[in-house]
Structures are given as structure tokens and as C-alpha cells.
Amino acid sequence: MEYKISELVAKSDTPKSTILYYIKEGLLPQAKKLKSNVHRYNDEHLELIKYIKYMKNEMGSTNEQIKVALEQKNNSFSSSYTMLEPLMSTLSGLVVNTQHYTKDEFIIHFDIDAKLLATLLEEGVLMPLSENDYTQKEASIINLIENFIDVGVEYEIVKEYVKQATILAGLEHKMQKQLCEVRNEENFSTLWKIMFETLFNTKEYIFNRATYKVLHKALKEEIGDK
Image 1 (spheres, rainbow, N blue to C red):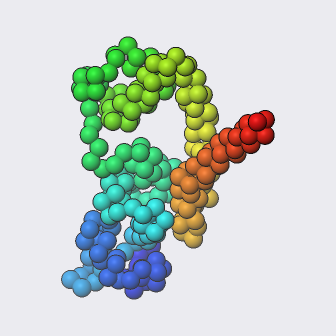
Image 2 (cartoon, rainbow, N blue to C red):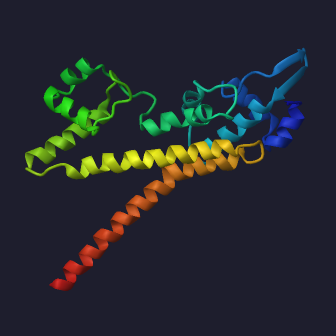
Image 3 (cartoon, rainbow, N blue to C red):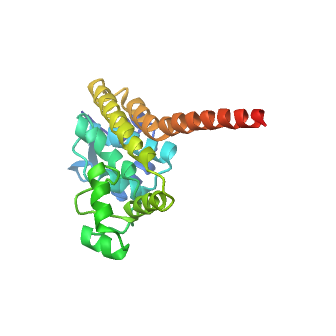
């Protein structure tokens, strides 16, 4: 469906100046030009404006971060893939200017034990974004595992994290597909809110609070025994 700029302003509840600014910054595609002073916008513009506003207001994302997240988008967010794609930059946990290394560069730069690296890759403890793409994140995990080994403690907790995270990721994917199946123009913003809040706020809240409660109970029992 096509809209005049006034209609897009009303539907998105966004000032005309802001919409034109988003276009100038490359966050929105150019409008369809019918005549020199006649332009038309479409549902993609409306969907993207809602997405941009959510990312800015709820996630605190900058224009550059949003632009990076949208670089691989399709023409709409109606499919499973296109709804998921803008999440990937956030899920990777990497900032825009993160230094990337090939496997060989990574081993040399961080003085990595190649045998330990192979073991952690096989166990799924180490999960580079691709087969030959390593960052400081991977180096930090290896350093943690080396600390476990140095003090003579098995890193079973990390392996269990991998196991449970894999199960949880399957449930998250199922949720994402269900959201895509019920998507329409009216509930688009709510679906994004559910997706982001679940993955980045609720998950952290539940996991951290569960750990807090277990440790708090243990502490109380320890004090009570004294």
C-alpha cells in the first residue's frame, strides 16, 4: 500500500522532519518519486519506522547500530528470516568496530594453545560466528577455561551452559516462528517488543534472579549454621 507523507506521519506517529532525517541517514529507503514534488511511501517505510523507534527508545541503539542491523534486510519483515536478521548484530554481542581474526591470526595474536582451541570447538564451548572468524570474545572464553584448568577444577558448569543454551535457543527459535505467523500491520511493534524483551531482558532477569535466590538461600543456611 502506498502513502502520502502526511499519511505516513499519521500512521507512524512520527514527524515529517524525523522521517526525512531517517531517509537522509540511510535508515529508510528513498520514497517513490511520481513527480518533482510528489512522493509516495509504502508499508516497508511504516514497518521500518516502527522498528527504528523501538530500537532507539527501548534498546538505546544509535543510528549507526541500526544501520548495520538493517544492511542485510529484505523488502519486509513478514518472513521468519527477515524478522530475525536485524537481531543478529545484537545477539552476536559484538560492537561495530570489533577486531576480527582468521583462525591462524587468532592463535598467533592471543598466543592460543591450538590443541585446547580444537577441544573447545569440538565441545561447543567456543562458538565463533563462522569457521574462520574469531574475536576477543573467544580469547576471553579460552582464558576462563585455562583458569579452570590451572586451579584443577573441571569446567563442567560451562559445558552445562552450552547444553542448556542449545535447548533454550531451540525454544527461542520456535517463539520467533510463532510471532512471524501472527504478524500483521497492527501488531508489528508488539511482536518486536516481545522478541527483544524476551531475548535481552527477561532471559537475563530470570537467570540472574534464579542464581541470586539459590546463592542467597545457601548464604542464609551457612550463617544459620554458625
